[in-house]
Image (cartoon, rainbow, N blue to C red; front, side, top):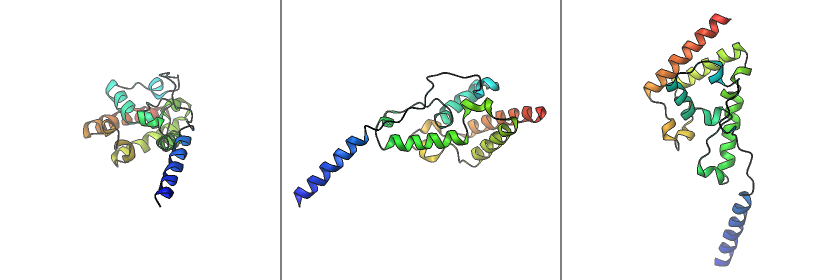
Length: 156
């Protein structure tokens, strides 16, 4: 019986080590800020920019700050799934490529999700405690979103 358990553990270890060979491309522009990035399209106050970088950009931009555990499978695959899905829904690095109507809709959804405490995801804030939005940060973000939404409404 011990021999069987050792064999299973050995096979499990081999599978775990082989999994480490799969390392998908990283989501990083290495600090590049393209002209269509939201910070180039709209003026963002420093306090709001800090909140966006801390709580949003890892999953919703082309520049993710990867933690140490992102080099270990299966955590890496799990993270990449979240990043891919996050960027499909909203990508601040591609903001300028969205139509004005789509930008308005995105801002509305962001505000609703902030108010409902749906973003950032609980699975993200579980490890990234500094990404949890407090009341003041929520208010600052929502006020900025309202100003940008108002400017978009005047354009349309």
